Image 1 (tube, rainbow, N blue to C red):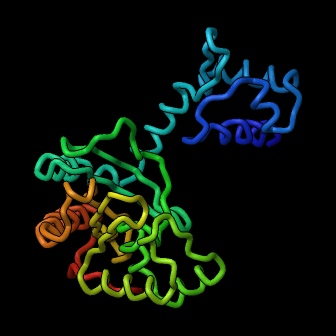
Image 2: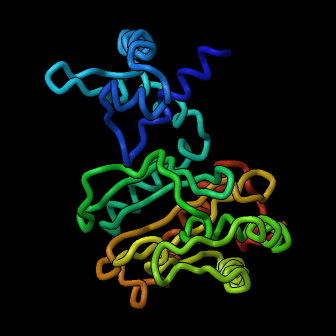
Length: 257
């Protein structure tokens, strides 16, 4: 158990905003001596959890992590059933397509593809984003009763990411209600400036929200003011097919349960 805790402490220091470390810096961050850390790092490199660059003396996450991540993602039935649909949506719209599941009060991206209209050099897979500030998150919240949403966010204030982020709980509840009525949610520069997104829920066997999928891109490329209805229709049709593969058999409109 002590070994697992040590491994977790080291690996979780390697994040998107800090993906590479030198031994001395990592030891300082972990509040241990460099000599005490040295043996653990050598073992982790040997087993592929980390990789080490001799020229720069920098550690990064290694191939074993990539293999484990791939195995984990492939075990999500939502990923397997949505895979071909997301590729088809990307080919048709040339936008970014995303598949996410709820992890606590965040969306975790299971799949992400960029179309020709996108200019990105990295993937969103594995990244987390707040439910209240994303279209994916809002359709997930729409699958919950309002009282549960109010209870959760009464303890955790709604953080602002841009001037357009919803930070008022009553406004969020209204937005969730709109998502229930329409069957989809939109996001207009709420998480990042200059970007837009439209998302729909994917329903599981019991009718609950199992995952969500979206189209996203620069606001001029996705042009929701002009294309919202078209993209909503494409997404709803694809989500209906995926939901059926997951065992959902009832009518499509999303109702809180």
